[in-house]
Image (cartoon, rainbow, N blue to C red; front, top):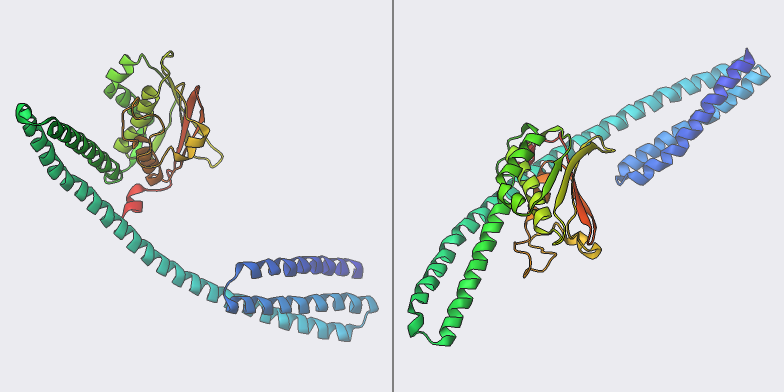
Length: 344
């Protein structure tokens, strides 16, 4: 019987030693001096328990019942103190966590409100800018009616002014398009295959002109904003057609799998001109065109819109590309997040 009791005590000693060692790791996670002091006290109590357990083994071995009773009494006393300290420290931790979370919640609310106000202000500004730009364009066009009476230098200046105003109008329109992402925040479970069919139908002209073949594999229903998700696929398919190889008909494959985070991971793969490895980190930046502007039209905003939509849905977007062979765009959608909550 004594052997079994001693064995149980020694198992307890082993567990207690492991607990003391693990307590040291907590010190590296705590910045608060008060918390560190509390954990050191708990560690001291555990060390006293350890001495008491080892002493109990010795007393049982020499069979001195009187000393054993005293040791057990002391162990129970320190046990009660230990439990009280743990509960007190737990209450203190929870109080500070609650206060921190409350403060963090307020700061997040302020940040979201300011972000929303800033977005609305910029969005309104881009709309307001269109009027003076249109006025400049109108005046420039009217002045071309006086070509016969103008000097060559004046004609050149009017031409440059018109081109600059056209470019500014395109930039303002593109920025307004980018900032409009997320304004429509309603989410619902939508059929991804049906959304893609609608997108392809709306792009029928460019798809037919490029003789593009689009293969859609079985796609899942997802919790998303329907119109925003359309913009994702429209931009990715449009890029695949625009940046195609001259001698090869575009082939686009759209599929979805469950990734290691148990999320739906979509892939849009093409056989286009691809992206150079050094340019991949820049692909999703605002107004970043990775290919010559003289050859490929656009403002370099499509992939930025894709990233903004995906991130507002709680997902991530990235790409893999082999220059001269094609590109695969990947994105995930986190159905556990509600876009409306993120924008409030």
